[in-house]
Length: 337
Ligand SMILES: NC(=O)c1ccc[n+]([C@@H]2O[C@H](COP(=O)([O-])OP(=O)(O)OC[C@H]3O[C@@H](n4cnc5c(N)ncnc54)[C@H](O)[C@@H]3O)[C@@H](O)[C@H]2O)c1
Image (cartoon, rainbow, N blue to C red; front, side):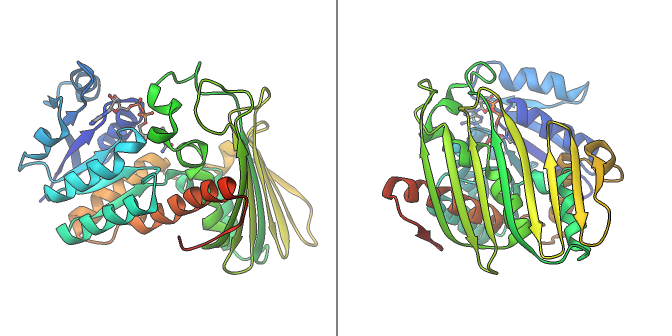
């Protein structure tokens, strides 16, 4: 197979962005799009296609029946990731699934099992680890110059969805999972990149100022990691003045990042404190979205393991699910669930 034909499930904002990633890959193309919203698949096909023939479907099942489509990208709302992935696997298609992989560990396991038993690849779109400045910080940590990481604190808190997004699925816990799934799958994944696998999760959360959503808008999460590290996250949609920043503590250094100044500041013991702008930190790195799609396509065409396999999404889902259990029961939750 020289060119991978991909079916896109979900023609929303992210689906169209991911189609741009496919366009950037020279050995794959979007051949069809499925979306039940009237006209959405056609509109996306016209936008993405630029003259190329892309077929539009209202039903993913119908699109999955096509033999010439070898892989799919699942960019439907979160609550459909498990169902769509399993349907695609049963139809023999390789799957790239957006984050959050699933809303429960049971669903994530079922997705992995479905792909394993069908002999198809499964990759999860945990793109943050590929995006600057995060990838730059991870590479700095990997040099070992700052010693061993032992602590990390991230704040990612802002205003509500309502005005900015408006899609109803993002307003319902059953459909989006709440902030730890829908938004902070990225921060949870990043903390795992720095500190390894989680052993214990404690969380406390409530809804204070966002009556239009049925989930918590203020979340505090504490994670203990297997190598002894400690992580914490402050998240939600309740801040009138938002903030997105973090600190990584290592035995021989410290790293701060701040989306307000778009700068990473780091200090290596015995040296001058240094700064780099996010723009400079991103130099030389492939755009994360293009990289994840390129790697998925290569894994399928070369028959290799995708670099972000299902287990990675399962671990992130497990932390988010454990946080919900912890907050509801006011106790720490020991992993695995
Ligand atoms: N990696 C990232 O940084 C990132 C950023 C944004 C969104 N996402 C993820 O991408 C996914 C989609 O988000 P979005 O912002 O594009 O949402 P969106 O609401 O813009 O688009 C979702 C689309 O899915 C369609 N859809 C609903 N049911 C469907 C079904 N049964 N089959 C096929 N399509 C269906 C909707 O009609 C809509 O067009 C979510 O899982 C979200 O978490 C990831």
